[in-house]
Each structure stands twice: as structure tokens, then as C-alpha cells.
Length: 196
Image (cartoon, rainbow, N blue to C red):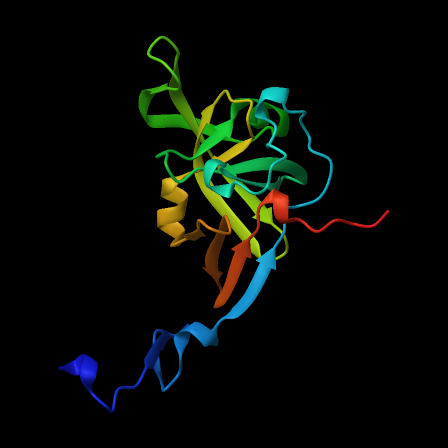
């Protein structure tokens, strides 16, 4: 069997900018990537959140909390939640208004039900939002524009799938490969304390 072959070797194939392929033999692809950890962006949040949406102070129970971080959009620091159990990237309608982001009609409007059958939201608009987290991770995603108070940007399964994002559920971190560097996004709770 091929898996039992004593002459096995790793081969990494890279596609160069001119379309040519480059082969590297006996390279362990796991160790061929620079590791970078990005903490949430710092700065004053441009909007005050309601008390109901505040992240719990208990750090020890990561399995019950979503991933919270901060990003920067149009020079403003915004709260981001990554929820891998949902199917739509979302953007706060208030953020769209305040930052005057360009919106467009949603090609397939639909109703979004939040917590019960009586309260639903009609999704009719979307926007492409450029954002960055730290110095290494810059991105731009299409988001459905909806009214929400918990955060300004909600990244969900489409973002994770399209970017091949890996979620370490135990550490509650997200890793993404950017320009042959492995960038790990750290949650708000692991941000180092700054001495006064």
C-alpha cells in the first residue's frame, strides 16, 4: 500500500504568479508557514452596546460563548462576532448609516427569523464591507444589512467556508492562511493586559 511505502516524501506544489508550478520535495508543509497571532483592534468603540449584549466576565467556559473580537472599518473600531452555526454574514444597519457604506438591493430578498415566529426581519439590502483585524488580516465580505444591537459585523459560515478558516474550539481562536502566513485571530478575552 502507498501509505506503508518506506520511500514516502512530501511534495509541495506552488503556483507562481506567471502560472508556472514549482515543486519542493521533502518539505513539511505545516512548518513552511509563518505563524502570526492577531489581537482584537484597540480603540474606542464607535457605538455603545446595550448591557444585554456584553460578553460574560467568566473566561473559563469558552464552549458556551461565541468568538468576539474587534475590527476596523473605515477607520472606526467595531465589534465582531463569529458564529459558525449560522448561515448569513450580517452587517448592522446602524453601522451602514453612520459610516455611509454603499448598499445595494439584495438579489434574493428573504425573511430572517430571530428568536420566535412572531418577530422576523425582511432582508432587502446587502453591502460589501472592507475590514481589517490587526496588521496582518485584511478582508472584504458581502453582508446582509439588518438591524442588530449585539455587534456591528457578524461573520458566519459563508466567511469561514470561502476563506478556509479553521476554528480551534478549545482555544476559541480562528486561523486563516494569508499570503503563506498562518494568521490566528484571538478573542477579546485573551488580549494582554496593559500596565497603567
